[in-house]
Amino acid sequence: MIEFFTVIMGLLAALSIYIPRLKCDFIFLIVVIPMVLISGLRWEMGTDWTNYYNIFASPDSSYALSMEPGYWLYVKSIRYFTDSYSIFLLITDGATIGGLSYLIFRYSGRSFLSLFYSTGTLFWYAGSLRQMLSLVFVTISLRYVFHRKPLQFFICMALAFSFHKSSLFFLINYFIYNNSFIFLLGLLGLLIILIEYASIIFDYIVSKFYEVVSIQFRLYTEGLASSNPWLGIPRKLFNAASLFYFYKKIPAENIQNTSKLFEFYFKMVVLSMFFYIIGAFFIEHVSSRMDIFTGFICIPILIGMIDSRLNKKSLQVYFFALVVFLNMIFYLRLEFLDLYHPYSSIFYNSNYIRELY
Image (tube, rainbow, N blue to C red):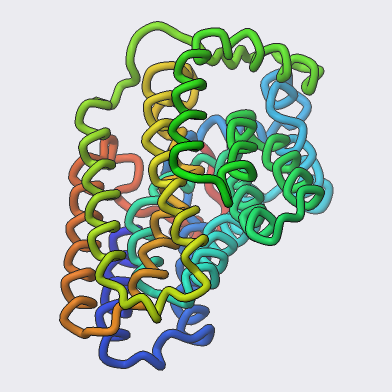
């Protein structure tokens, strides 16, 4: 399923090099609507399927009540109108896959190359419903970072936090815009020094914000995540270096008033490495998915911004080949592909009803 739409996005990205008029909302809708429908009507596949199914089936259970209040209210609101998990999942994928695709597409200047990368990376985490819903608000908040609207930014981040606790860390986004890389590196150095003590601070804030904390969410834990961070970190360094190389190929007149935007997104790429390390080494229940909030949103936007400003077809072709390579590296490192294959849908049964086995 994901591979199919990744290939479609890749073909559109390649064709748009020579047919720029393909970069329009109409083509976007033709591709994204079927992607939302096929993903939203899946059954018994993807990450955390059983957990989220059980939360929806029993929203008043102690396990469901231990979820973040935003997600719990979201589930209860939809359960008020329907008890169909397929309808719930379709609405959720419309908000997450559809919403994030639209935001990335618009922020990147209507680039299908950005969607090619995000479809091949971000949407493998579509089953992480709370984190994906939280990510929508984090992505919306970026516009308020650029326009320096703190009230709207903090409202978005409060909503994000109500869906997934880990988004609390990304309040930092507001403060790195318009500041130098030296400021960012100094801030990261301070965070590294304080990271062990941040467990106490983080747990205190979370315990005050949430009334129900039956599932412990500890910041500082011993041991490594199941994935190998020593392979992930060089990959992220390569991502940053290769994107910066093509950024330097953009003519100065094509950057104009967007230099601060480029600088912000490159800071976020650096930040994604830092949060990858935090997720891999320090956060028990999030693991290396911590950098979803930075790397998997800002990198595709950055890819689209670079792609739309390269003035030579040859450079666009080379850049497209780079993104193909980045997607291949990500795909080859994926684990538990049996969660996604074979594709199964509610429509496999004539009565349109499937039980959880």
